[in-house]
Image 1 (spheres, rainbow, N blue to C red):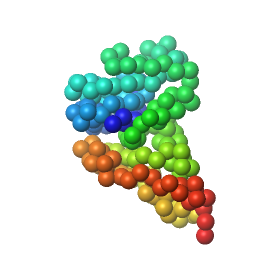
Image 2: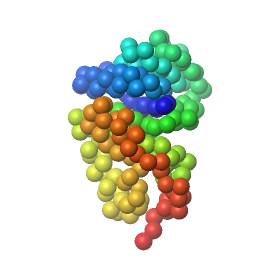
Image 3: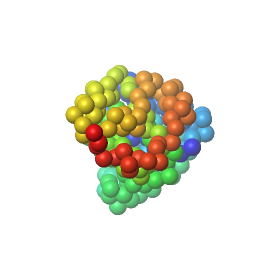
Image 4: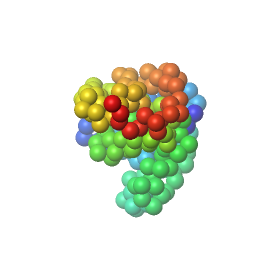
Length: 193
């Protein structure tokens, strides 16, 4: 399986986030999964890559050229692919992935996550989206998305486009338990009565 992981580069957050990211990387590699992520060496990005590499895993980084120029790329990856811009990076991360896992992060991580959810709603992405809810990070987002549905900006069925898990050990079982998204996604994309 090719698993796309969205995660942050912050080195100032609680170190527990980095520990969890590293554990996830080890788990993915041990299961024979290819990790595809943003290519960075710092924060949770570096930790998830280092974890996978330490367990002999294949790690593919997708990094915009301007970030490579700033020397933000991870030097030890199986493969580092340079792209023109952030838009292309997001496209390449998601293309061919068998699942998305979002770790806690800032606006970049959230933007990637929301794009994946949007594409799933529109029937352009059909695979699992798992939010690793470390320290309850995504609990407020889950509540917010329930409000979005309560206010009729999305349909109730859309709540099943993603799932939350609390520990990295639950990520692969959640991926395996998640069925392919509905083939009628476009029929339910528009909010109805």
